Amino acid sequence: MKPIKFRALILTAALAATPALAMIPLAGSAKAASAFPVVIELFTSQGCSSCPPADALLGKLAKRADAVCLTLPVDYWDHLGWKDTLASPANSKRQWAYARSRGDRSVYTPQVVVNGIAHVTGHDALAIDDAIAKVRQNIAHDQVAMTIERSGDILRLRAGAGDPGNRHSEATFWLVLYAQAVDVAIKRGENAGKKIRYFNVVREMSPVGMWHGKEVSIELSQRDLASRGHDGGAVLLQAGPSGPIIGAVALSGL
Image (cartoon, rainbow, N blue to C red):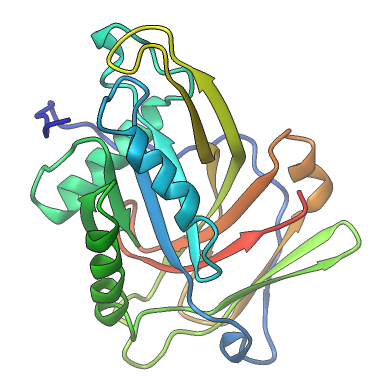
């Protein structure tokens, strides 16, 4: 669909119940133990006729070992004859916050945002690859290594210190919980009659701690996460409310 112009929306932090956490300085760097995955966010809608190819492509991208891929269904096309069954106003606000941060007010579906910085059309695989390469170069000195270890019920997230050239002195750890695959039969609107599979559909996103440039560890309860009924997750390290994502790690076995 074409870009749309809305009145500015204010991004609000998702402050749903969050797991108990403890922040502990690390004795050694976590950087050597972790690669830097790219974060691909797809803003999509069940009421958008050009979105199904992007939804399918996100499923392919999600198989990449070097990527954390997320689907964020938006609600601003619900008036076109079909109310998106997975959409959240928080996803629409997040997309608008990115546009304001870039200063271009470019909001559309399907839209892919790479590491909170670059945006491209969501069904253009070549453009996404190009954006990934450019973003990695842009934030090469800002990236923070992250790992996750399991010990009984405890998931211990470790984040390394920032490089001397890192432009960010603090960032927020965001816990993202998602459904790995959701099939939806669309009965009305532009995609009427289609059954579409959505991948890594974000159901919860909440802050669980802060990074201040130094090595830290955060403890999460695996039992608490499993009780929420979602089968996938990740932790993103994002500068500002809608700035660059400078670290990420996937959670497995929820």
